[in-house]
Length: 260
Length: 201
Image 1 (cartoon, chains in turn cyan, purple):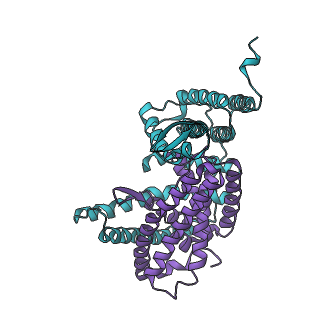
Image 2 (cartoon, one colour):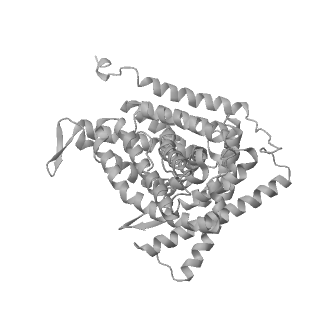
């Protein structure tokens, strides 16, 4: 799990929009547009757009499917009870509770929206690692301290995970098996406690080492990445498509008007 | 506790984003530049710890640690949680993008409240009690806020909100028990950690 943070498996070459900055921006736009849309037709068009982006990203089906499935379990739990709590004409009933049609539609729409956004996030963030993300966020105007905190956090997640792994190995060697008992909870409590203490000591050493090297809260060499003009053209054409789909949901589209 | 995109109503989402932005701004203002590596290492530590699954009943759960984060980091809980949630959303696929604001608020605000309330009291109660109160009350508040954000998004979520709240209770007890052991250990081994790393604590 940790390795996905630092070494994304897919490289960015075959994805659309070479520039990571524009991809993060586009991802946010798609997410907002999808969440704010309330119309099935527009959601369908978004789904087609995002599927296209996914095809271009070169992610494998199994990798994508696994992530979508993990998220769907969570979303399903959230929407499971909606059909039974929205009033309306019951379609079917389970032990006396009727599932209404508007409720089912609402639950389906939520499920679709969540999947579209997640697919967009995966397709557009493919090839961006956490360090690049930090740089991109600075360029997009996020406060410097926030981005710096993020880059440092990412750096030390790996280090502390290794520390955790060592402690966990030591527990396993001594025959520790987790279960539902006080012994397990105490052992985990002490494990996390030791992890915190070691993190604290390490933080102290890092702080001092960085001060020795003249760290005053920002890195000296930070060259902004240049975005080629053709990237902007591609970005704005995608943005146009998103705007078009989003606005189409406001037109009262009724097929019967067009069939004479 | 991650709410996915598309579930919540627009006003709830916008309120969450606005309040998270304010909280993050306050947190960043309280962070000295030379303390950034310090905050980052603790934030990474909590990130790693929250990835670990602990058996509870027939399944397993992961802890949130927002009570401890509030106790040790104070207002920094906002930027720390926001970073953790961005990383989780982008690289692990938990949660969503637009809902980041609400998710962060639901976890970080209880952390700040619990930290502010319990830190002055830490000399007046045993470490076990301090840990249990911090861990369980923060998770309890988070559960309440998640239910509230669902409930405010429409009557359709009323039942789900109730289920989330009650389902959260065993979690909060577990978090309290484990936090109490963590605080007992920290109190013995490194009591200076409780001084916090903010410049003005």
